[in-house]
Length: 103
Image 1 (cartoon, one colour):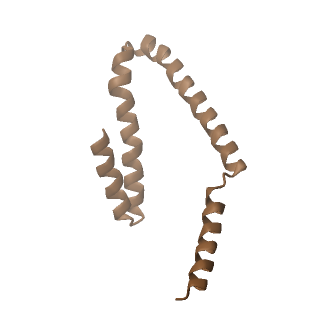
Image 2 (spheres, rainbow, N blue to C red; image 1 turned 90 degrees about the horizontal axis):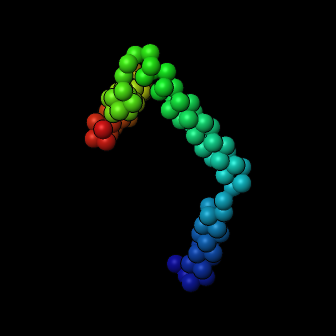
Image 3 (spheres, helix red, strand yellow; image 1 turned 90 degrees about the vertical axis):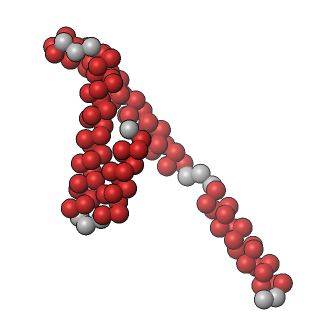
């Protein structure tokens, strides 16, 4: 390799890095909108606790410590089963093991 070739390769890589590092405005706007929607759905979930507490007689602590983690893990395990049925065993095992480690 010549010095000239190395110089041009470095210039090319530097241009690639600049393109990757530039934030994309539509992506940022999308993330802000999704974050807002998630916060709204979280508010609806927390506000629905009052009805469950009155109707079923559960305490807020029981719902927060027992019911919500069961629902969260059920969604993860359902995803693992779906990916296993599609014959993506590596992903299915990763989801199941990761869910067990985190929980």
